[in-house]
Length: 154
Image (tube, rainbow, N blue to C red; front, side, top):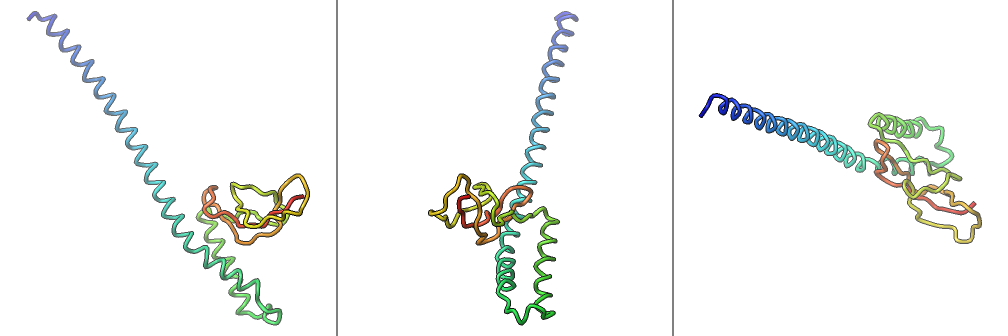
């Protein structure tokens, strides 16, 4: 084998190994990105599951506050319980949990609202919320629990 043939073989081998190295680097980079995305999705799923377990507690406290007898509304203990819900919601907002707007007159959006009741007799061109039956929430902009609403036309 001549010296020039050896050099050609070595250069060819260098090109082949360089290509292999570049593919391996690209595969590793893809793996790293996929791992980071999986880790973020797992964190979000765990966060969502934990928050979903807390939401019924918030619902029950809100119902209790809504049905507080008129003579107890000024009671400091009752006011403390009402503040408890506000503090809990503020803490959850720090986790990017936001309540879905489902006030009377808000346009119905099936991405965020679940129609439980519908006023069949109402007339109008657009569907709007008549009443919020259960609060809905988004986590990082994605609904984790739709707001249950009564819908009418306007």
